[in-house]
Length: 227
Image (cartoon, rainbow, N blue to C red; front, side):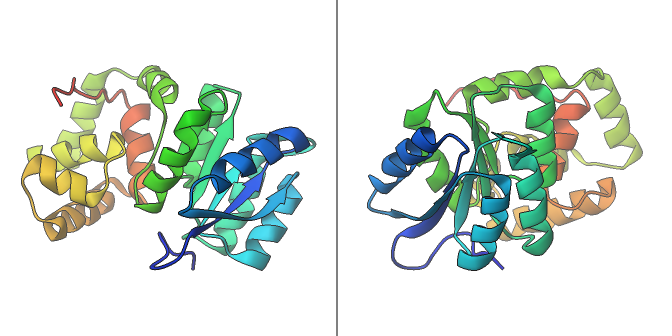
């Protein structure tokens, strides 16, 4: 099982992009951070699956489109073998279907290649247990849900989701980890973990990534932040 973050030494990163030059550039960017180590560079979905199985990196950065296959296919195979694998998609394609497919699979993030300055912060955020969308992706997610927010309210009423649980769901959808949720809602981390477990059971969902996708797909909207 892939660990969320290494206890000592640099985090081991796998980079896969079918563009050789792009893959090299990404590896150079990642390697510039002393807390990160690129353990391998691949150029296809098959490379991603094979290298992940062989090397068990702490996190894999995958291109979304790779020749005859895709990063989605690679992620599906990786997560089938290792459900705890951390996967961050980095792509030039801001496509709603790709975004939903990637996050519904259990990927921990989806950011644009053009925003190369966000890559290292995104990697560290995912290693800390956060889900990272990127500003442009968050904007698209806010428009993905075709259902009105009232339908989400009705569903929450039906499944007996309390006001506190709804607040936790919003923070999960915003990509916050348990500590951040605890700080924002003045709860203990243990309470947050328990709340999320209860919510997942009530909504018949597997994990917090599915919970975030469920929120967006059913018309959820994030409140404006003052901080």
